[in-house]
Image (cartoon, rainbow, N blue to C red; front, side, top):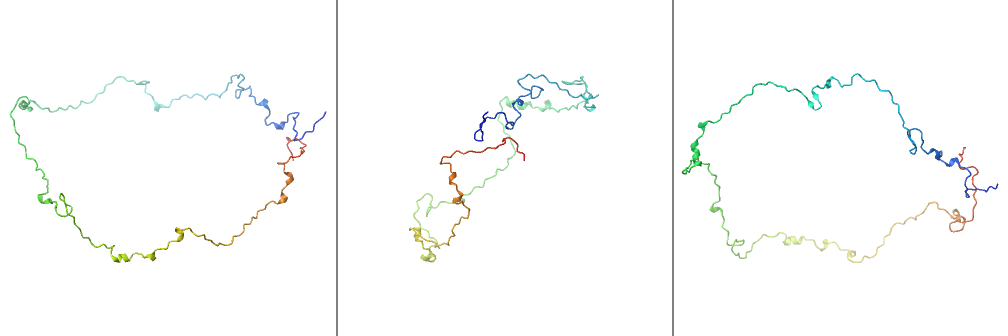
Amino acid sequence: MYRAWVGTWRPHRPRGPVMAQFTSPGPKYSIPGTTGYLKHDPTKKRAPAYTCSGAKPPVKEGCSPGPCYYVEPSMTRTGKYTAPGYVMCGRPKVTTETTPGPGDYFTEKSEKHIYKCAPAHSMSFRHKTIAKDISPGPNAYTVPRVMGPNTAYTTASPCYSMKWRNKFATPLTLLQTPGPAAYRKTELDVYKTRAPKYTMRAHSKPIVDKTVKPGPADYYIGKVTLTKAQAPAVTFGIRHSKYMTPLI
């Protein structure tokens, strides 16, 4: 039988499955099982499972909290039920209030509310002295002036006032002002076009690049295949299987 030569650049379908290509045991193990109760196949019918637990501990003779939590027999679910009982206590203290008798009322005074009576005047004690306010007397007021400036209701004539000498306007103070020499001369560059200026600086060192750069011999012009057509090339594959574990 003719066997075609096969390389890495000419793939073909393998004759049988290569076990190194599969990372899992196979698809037959991914199906859920049909035995047991846990992780059962949901598409299959699952039988009921029964569990066996341990024996129960022995029952204690008394399981009540104790005599300190004794519940009275008269206590029911709706409350405490007791028979009616009577208690005996001391006699209460009786207090008698003193009320006015018939002689304490004067019926004569009620006639003025029913019948007409003459006017009557009562005499009372003297009231306290009313505090007197100390008001200003006539001499406490000043009559507004009618002469000079600032009159109240008359027309005032013009008046002039004399003021003291101003200390800032004396000839002595005028002599203390700065002269023309006290001011700095304004540069012409402030309000005119400035002439060009040149500065002299130190000699600068040339920049020297000391990095290693490739030369003409480092380039391979013949290996350029981006713009030129490439001739067919033949590669050699490996002899052993690429799925075999190398043991050195």
